[in-house]
Length: 179
Image 1 (cartoon, rainbow, N blue to C red):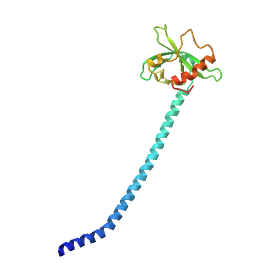
Image 2: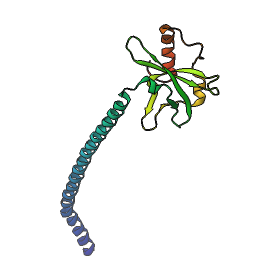
Image 3: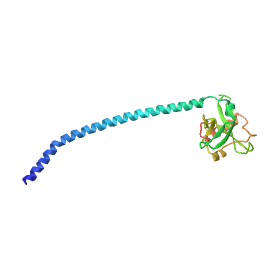
Image 4: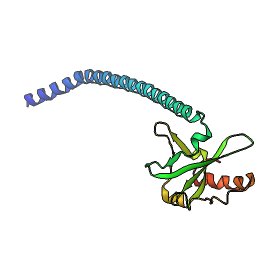
């Protein structure tokens, strides 16, 4: 029995002396973990800032290339393709707002054979995106959707700016751009 009591006493005394040491060690490890978490947070902030800077640079480069001027004669006749590379037609004409001189629409010819039976579409200029190395415009639309788009034939263009303005909001919604 004395042996059991001695073993229990040793265990209790050992725990009493080891517990503060263990607690101090645990506190030290917690402090280390908190410091490392703070370092990770700082690195995340740095990486997020670097990513934002890269995104801003890319956006500025894209805007710069989109802002470049081009002659109308270079634009008319340019091919229009969708994002998968399918041909959607070519630009026949440009519609310019006489008040501010901005291009509002590109008139794209699609359908028909050898220029016969083509349907014309007034596509908001903002819906088209230039592909610099490939020399064509991209419209994020598939052929079937384009077939259903509001359009007109070669002999029945909108007569005046009021008619174009009537179409502006509907075309903006159809092509998902602000008029």
